[in-house]
Image (cartoon, rainbow, N blue to C red; front, side, top):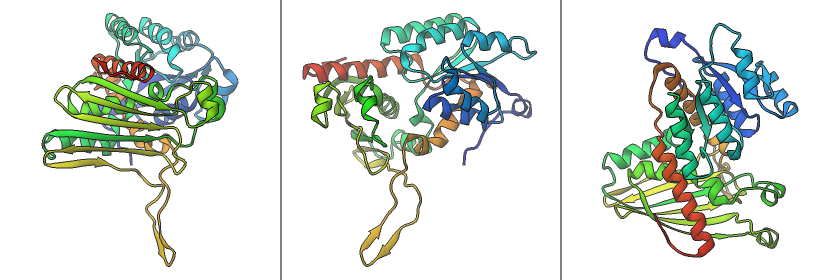
Length: 348
């Protein structure tokens, strides 16, 4: 169960007024979380694709706008100003939306990555700093209770000195062939950032070198140079070695695991099943599949993420993911892509 927090009766009564930009899969997830949070007033959906966005705006009984400019102008006529905007659109659109929101004094939550390069990411943080607004990037592992528990286990010294970590990401359902062949991102750039951010946070350390290899699971993908499986080896400055394995093809359910091995023990995040019932009979032991996909596995984390955004808007609470985190994650992902292309270790 998700619990929402506040620091006083006054703040419990206050609501942050927020727009959602984007009505795709992440837009649906964010809208649901915002609508269900009593500390947030959902003020509208923004999308150039009005037909796609119409059902979302009707479901949550909130206005629909074709542009951020239109939404800001419309809400400016009310007595209460907007506080923030949640950007859930493709990465190439982030820059213009972040700049427009900042220029209108709106704090911003954006899906990862902030932008496609480390340089542009830093530039956008500077723009927001100059406007005195928050730029909050979403890395949902940090808001998941199991991953938070692993963080505290490692950083309390419970496993001693971390020596190695193994992370496995298996996507489910497998993306459509059209997505993979017509613009679906390389799995390294599309899927590694969350785990790179998390393991940096857990280890409180920086990556100094990256080696990555990628494969295509069939001839059609290989012919289009589409990598749908990859392995990254990250070496950290204090000596911890981390293996991150990524695949688009976990046909048995969403597979997301993490193990950190140390001198005095090991901390693990395991998968979450669809339910907890098991059957034992003469043919064997029968367990449920893992949860269907990331919206189910991280539903509570997404809700806590939006509640943390409310803390930032209403209470001035600093966002836990800083500019440095976003820039360093992007540098690691860029290095992994370079390593995959050159078959060389890339030093940072």
